Length: 92
Length: 229
Image (cartoon, rainbow over all chains, first blue to last red; front, side, top):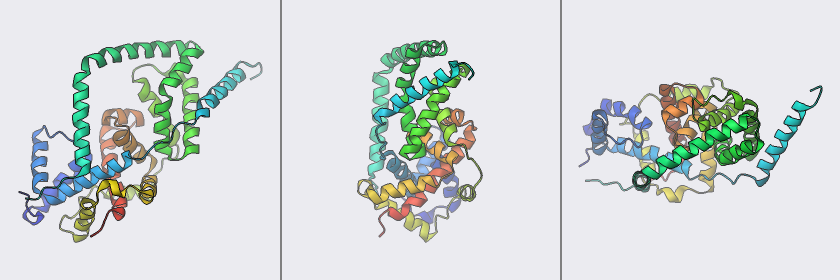
């Protein structure tokens, strides 16, 4: 059963805040992580904060990168060829 | 008892389980493959250093999609990403002899792309704001609770529309470049804190604090696009 946040000390939420923002997918294996998991299970605010941070990352992951332009590789090799030619030209 | 079912959590939970399953079932094969590809990569690098053009071409082809993806996510602009792609591989061509193999080749490549994008690092007002995000919010504050509730009420699939795409772009563009690079490397490219630190030449605690502040900043910038009661 989740408790109302009024039943929790804001100090403990503040303590959890930093950890939550760094470790969204922590496996909660250490003692500290277990304590944090227990807190999240009891605290609607921290649970909502964790959820909103995960959603933020999820939204960015949904963005698509356009396909690499087909001509880009060709242009690159042409520039490198030119630079190589310049490097080996006399007087350069 | 209040149970919150969140699509994001379900998605992440499935993703983690899938990764664990795939990793376990493919562990043996992967170990052989990694060894083989690492050997062939070392040989490619060594041949390219000795002026073998075919080896250099192959090296470019092996990594061009990685460089393109990372450059685009950092620059968020087609023209700048193309420039960064070009500059990165020209640097690789020029400086390949300086690559000593102590780090992974991909780490070296990522650092070249990031350096191209981090030319103008300077402390801006936005960085002062980001540092202020280290303070935990007052959980009893009604505004904070309303903001969090708006995320809770928004089915994540329905908010990804054109307006949200613009909002995502505008929010991330406000981050200083080194913060943006940490966010992209850790959360989008899924690099570890240690590898991100190597790529950006930062300490691991600096990577962690930048990631924490970036996530909170972006969440704060996006909450207006979440459904309000």
